[in-house]
Structures are given as structure tokens and as C-alpha cells.
Length: 69
Image 1: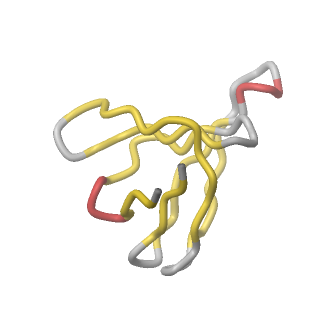
Image 2: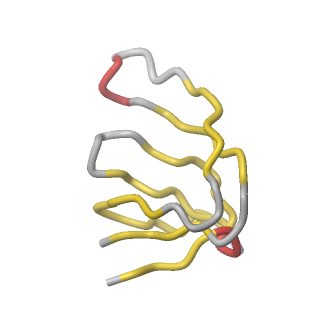
């Protein structure tokens, strides 16, 4: 599955493979698409997006992206 960002946004990214689960910011530009394995709703209007790379986009607003097949 892919998601495509529909606006420029800075997202919190967690890398669980690092062993310490540190988070960092990443700028995602409008129109950029990324491969993901799961989009998990966590609260009204927000999701965690699990990327193929093992990283997780944390607390991402649902209106910042669209799902693609």
C-alpha cells in the first residue's frame, strides 16, 4: 500500500529498529508518496503509519494524506 501526502507537513518519525525508539522530525512535501504496510487509526482524525522501511509516522493527521492502492 502507498500513501500520498496532500500538503507539506512535518511529521514525527520513530525508528523502532534503532533499539531506543528515538523520534525525529521529517518534512514530507505535497505529492510525495511512501510505501507502507499498515495505517493504524489511533484516535479521531489521527493515525500511525508503518512504513516498509520499519519506521513509523506517529500521530499523523488523516487529512494530510490519502491512501493509494
